[in-house]
Length: 424
Image (cartoon, rainbow, N blue to C red; front, top):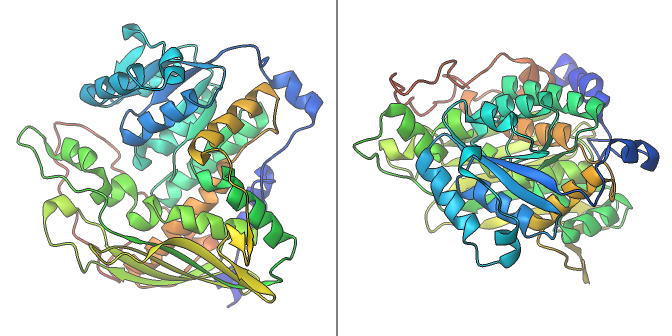
C-alpha cells in the first residue's frame, strides 16, 4: 500500500510519552517520591461535569478508601450540579458522605465554570463533562498543574486528539498523574488474562473481534424551554459533535482492549455503517445506529468490529482474540479463569491516588486513551465517507466537529445524517 500505511506520526509523536502504547509510564521510586504528596496528606478533589457519569466517578473516588475530600464542583447547568451534590452528600455509603466537603462558594456554573474550579486549591480534577469539551478541559487542567482523571472518549475529532496528546506530553514533563476511564485497564480479570496473552499462552494472535451491540442508551424529546444549544447538550448522545457517535462514545472500550492485546493501534480501516432502526426524528440526532469495521494492524492482524443500537437485537459486548495455540475472551483462557478483584470503576481511582502519593507506579494514560479514541474516530470517518482511512493521514486531518463558538442565543440546527461520500 506504500504511503497509505504511513504510521510515521505514531512512531515519532507517540514515542515521546510511551510506555503509553503498551502500559503505564513508570518512574523510579526516588523520582516519584520527589514529586508525590505524602500519603498522609488528604488530596483535594474537584468534579468537573456533574451528569450521571461524572457523579458516578466522584462517588467511585470517594468510596475507594482513598485519603481524599471532594471540595469543589462545576457544571454547565445549575440543576445538574445541584442534583449531583444531593446524590453525593446524601449517599448511603458513609465513606462517600464523610469525604464530601463542598461549600457553596466552591460550586460553579456556566461555560467558564472549569476555569473557576481550576483556581481553587484542588489537587485532582475529575473530568466528567461531555466528549466535545474534554480536549479543552484536559489542556487547561494540565496547564493548571492538577492531577487528572478523565472519562472516555477524550475527543470527537482528530484536532481534539492532537490537543490531548500535547497535554499528555506536558503532564509527563510535569509528572502529573493522568488516568482515563477505560476501566478495563484496571480490572484484574483483564490485566491477568492479557498478561498471559502477551506471554504467549494463545500463541501469536491471528485475528480479533470486538462487539458493542445493544439497545439505545437514551434519547430525550425537546422541552419547550430548551433552545438549540441546550437541547443538543442535554440530549448529548445523539449529536456527533457532542459525543462522537456510538462507535466513539461506547465502542472505544472494546477497541482499547484490542489495542492493549496488540500493544499497538490499527494502521488502516475499511468500514460501513448507517441508520436503520432509529427513525428520522430530532431526538435521535444526526448519528448512525450501526458500524461495521475491518481494522488492520501493522503486522497484518485484522480486527472485526461491530457496534450498533438496535432495539431488541442485542448481541452483546465483548472482545475475542484468536491465536495459533488457542483463543481468549480477554478475561479467561480455556478452563483458566482470572481472579476477580476490586470494582474497576473504583480501582482506577485507587490507582490514580497511589500514583500521586508514590505508593504505586506513576501513571500517565493520556496517549493511550488518545490512541484508542482515535481508533474509534478513524472507524467513524471510514464509515461516514465510504473511504479507507489510514492512521497517519487521519490523525493529521484538520477535521474539527465542535462549533468554534458556543452561545445559547445562537442557532445550532441539527445536521443531516451523514451519507457515505458526503463528509466525515
